Image 1 (cartoon, helix red, strand yellow):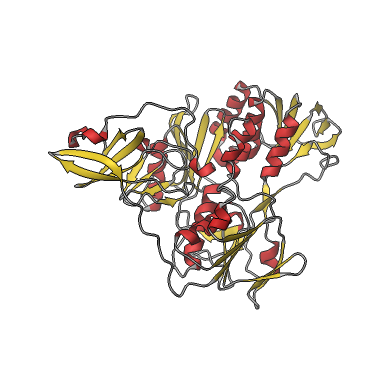
Image 2 (cartoon, helix red, strand yellow):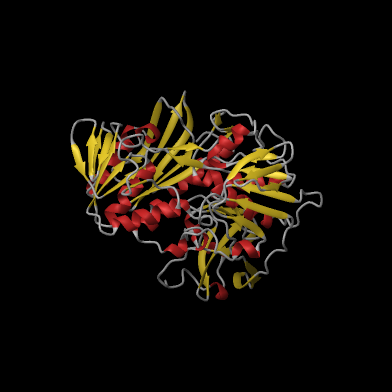
Length: 512
């Protein structure tokens, strides 16, 4: 499953044998990587106390020894998951599975680790918690909320209504490794099928919700059946924009949002020689990279002068373009596709391109219809307060549809990031149980282009300065996006700890 990917190849155990003990002087920056048998274990020193925890993130197996220790937690350098050093719990997405923690002993002045600790006792939800939770949506936010409700000890009913045909999946993988053919399909589901009945989560797939009856506290399904709720989470996500051009509805023209979409592109790629990707968004260019990995000629058509300049700025945009061109991608920028006639695409500039496969990646629109019809307050998304509650008491919203007050930028924002959606789902779940937790996580996303990861923390819709530390062309850099001298966001390539430190500084209200 996606949340428990492990390295395919067996590696020699790391560092010293912790069963034989190590000295306090062996630590570097309060961390020490060693092993117990075949298990790599990370020691972390916090004051006079030593913690021992599994050495790799349960999300994509990121090395925690290269991460950042914050209080009694450790953060993964790759995708900013966070783990409690005492319990091993994955306290912040994208990791969902906990890690083992190990018993630490002091013997003759040496630090010895030999066995795992017993798991912490299960949590118990408040006795006055609502009894019926309904979640509309089977994406990142919806799944994270359902999983967190059970993790928090909620024993009441959870009904999860998804219009997708597949159980919740690791959507970022659909345009990255899975589409490229380097990740097996068993990595794609967020949890195996048996998880839902075992956790007593009533997951209803291919189910359309047609209305929310706020007065009766129930949702209405296609066909007229109703599902009552005490608390409701709207996590309906976003819908890919479809091009309003002739020929866009042909079988070889694809969008990418669901597992079915990714499977269809993979099937079409089997005998395709040339592909057109319409749009130079993160998804579009990840698709381009994945198709190049399948040795397909790829043409990218997009109206902008530089790919992703609006988000990353001109220098990083040029780097991304050059990176893709080094791998054989052919760009047609400042242009658009006006029609697709069979395998021939007509460009606005007057030229044509032949392709066996077309993938459209020109953005998404939040699915707001349910919220609008229910009379919830809309502000370029579903307006929520700091606790992610909508204008209707007892109804929460999370993920791509939610516009929330972001304490870091001082603005109300809506973003379409996978990790943000998961973290909002987790916060919403705790608040549905009666909590009053403000959602204050710093927005984060990552994008992978061939062997180059781009991490981004914060949120900058506009800026008047980009300060570059390092060398973008050498793939070793950190960019600070500033407005009136204040850092709003940071992008980086192979500056993992710096990215984590920037996230932490934003959380704490410090200067980045």
